[in-house]
Image 1 (tube, rainbow, N blue to C red):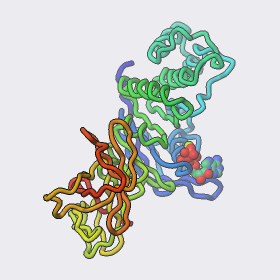
Image 2: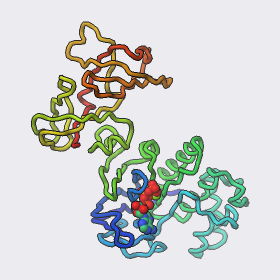
Image 3: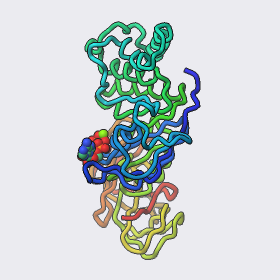
Image 4: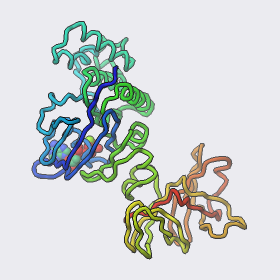
Length: 361
Ligand SMILES: Nc1ncnc2c1ncn2[C@@H]1O[C@H](COP(=O)(O)OP(=O)(O)OP(=O)(O)O)[C@@H](O)[C@H]1O
Ligand SMILES: [Mg+2]
């Protein structure tokens, strides 16, 4: 597939309602041309609604939508030049694989030779050339989803929209089809919006991720930004594992500054991505960013804790530890002898100042 001049997508103050009930409000977003963008969030947060609004199946009540310079807010779906892949494949059950993929080309009135060539190429690309004459009922879930992918891409759309395309597949197939999607997207350079509630999928596939919460974008950023610098406790908790400890700040903290956050009678340095007032806040530390060791003569200043229980996970051990004040944390240890500590052991913790955050509660 040649590199397309795919437009970016711009969403400006979008509002969407179902029967007077607002589901999306004041949502603005820019998706860079040719990039892979993921909408990530829990069930009911509005991911499908936003995707279907981008496709044109759900009307915008407020705001505007652009593909590149072209405004598409009121353009019907078949004029938007999109390819769509759904969770349930949505293949025509009575058509062969070939005819399923050919559908969009026939609808566009292309000649038989062109259709044959393009469908052949598309099926080759998703590894299904040998199954062109099968019916969908005679395919596995992963094969069906590859047909759906070929069908969406064969028309060389400007924008590719995918709604949880991997969620009906078992764990192994998910990884395989995930890789197919990543390869095809990179090859075609097509602007892609991918919906999932699976954080691993989002982190693995995306150039940028938008984390949704109740019809709003809570944070938009690269996978690294979302994971390392979550803007809120909600994002930290939804993407990856996070210790979120209620704390009290004794003074306001300006945005981008490091605060000495009181915890268990000590001070933990933590960066505040946004300005915080004095009072209630959340201390955020990922389990793998906290060091855990046996207390030694150098234990001075480090935080004392007790191991409550542990889970041996092969490449790491995940410890549940308790601070003197009763707060519990998860700490993951990798490396040699990562399972050296036992329940009941006294340990000391060191927080990594570069990886610890203080967020609004
Ligand atoms: N056709 C509809 N009519 C009325 N309300 C709807 C309709 N479709 C969705 N909703 C509501 O809009 C909200 C957002 O739904 P949406 O399907 O966009 O969520 P989602 O993030 O895709 O969830 P999931 O992960 O479960 O697919 C939900 O509260 C849902 O009940
Ligand atoms: Mg959905």
